[in-house]
Length: 400
Ligand SMILES: [Fe+2]
Ligand SMILES: [Fe+2]
Image 1 (cartoon, rainbow, N blue to C red):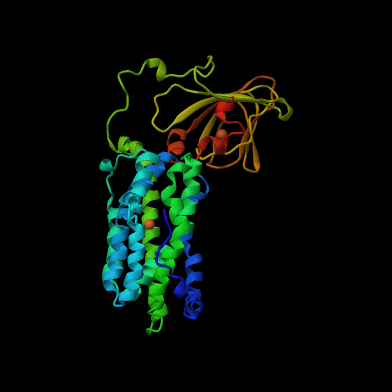
Image 2: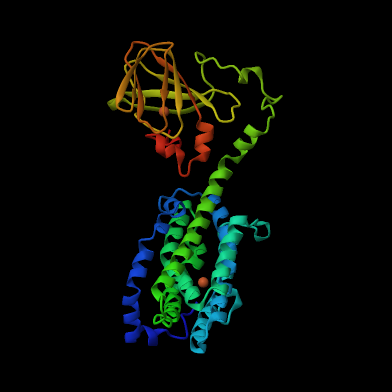
């Protein structure tokens, strides 16, 4: 992909550019410090919380924005009086359109990312109402706003954020395991859209002597970031909903979940018997850690019942997790650490562990401690963004 053929350097090198930059320094600062940057989508990308499947949904929706991008530029162009500035904007459009090679147009590079990088069938994408709203509003601001408004909307509020925004996306995508070869669309924009931003800045600068310039430009900046933030919030909200929607449907469904395939043995569990579904164990003699965790066979929707066994004089790991838990002490004596307090326990006692509280069970007796732990794991582990197991355990299950 070659660089821009019409240089913006005549403007960038002029004294006008410097005085314009100082005039809008407050706006640039406002953009950099805007609450938009703290949105949940970016936070999830920075922390590596999203899976490839999450990104399939996110960028399927983003596709509608991407494939309309040249229309936003065209909206501004139609509003511009100055034919010289229109010619410069035309250069942006020319580059967006792949210059002489249609296969290199940016939306095609985005399609390549979707199809080859994420394995998405474009024909099956269902754009959601909030995605249509986002794109419709973008078109409206750029086509129907004043040229001053549209240029501030697209420069300060759009092109100027692209490089940093796509770097955040790339970090999230790499963490989710996508290969670098599929990231061309993002890499190109991280490298070249500063030139696009400079063209748009020059257009914006042409209005800088107008009364109310800074107020109008700031309004446009805020509206652009607000719309994008609202769209991103919609994406994360929808992701969250999709994770637990099957549970919600079953809750609302008023249909018995007792399948004819379920055996009586799946509905009754004998904690004292040998277990059939070990899910975790750890032995670290130096720390006095020696325990096993097994899962009851119940065909449960959100409840996950487990049996924790701790050998005499030992403990399980000190840990915390998103699921909440009720302990029923079947046998053994000792204490349970819950946050900063110790609760003494004996057979027959019930103990509650709230979400995310550090806890640990300590067997202080001469016989094995056996605890029935009833959790909402099947719900919380689906609702949670990120690697659930790594939040709770000293060792990953794969390392057992
Ligand atoms: Fe582009
Ligand atoms: Fe626990």
